[in-house]
Length: 121
Image (cartoon, rainbow, N blue to C red; front, top):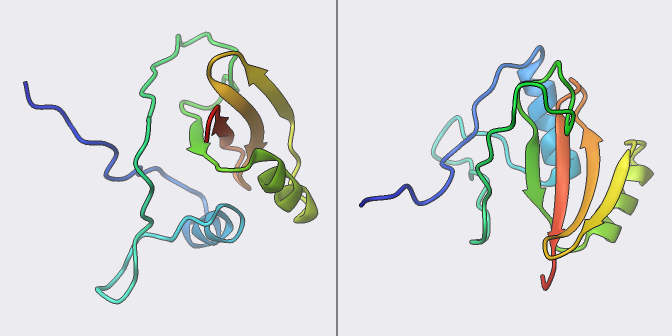
């Protein structure tokens, strides 16, 4: 059976796409989508990606949001410090046995973002 190789992109609506793309680039290092052949897209390292539909009534993230982003990070403590220094609230930090460490932030439009430092790297 053929399988997809990973995410090729994540496309979503935003109130202010340019400002939101700039926020993701500034605070999380995600290059905006290329508009020409000179721009470099965001390139990730290989690794686990979780595709996980949640029940409609889940309280794992806000009921008003239909999705939550999860980004893998190399050093959660340094990322949290960097975000806090930029005035971004870090609301949840937890460790899940066997999986790793997690923190929760929100982008300027309220999208929940989970930052994940897997165990072992």
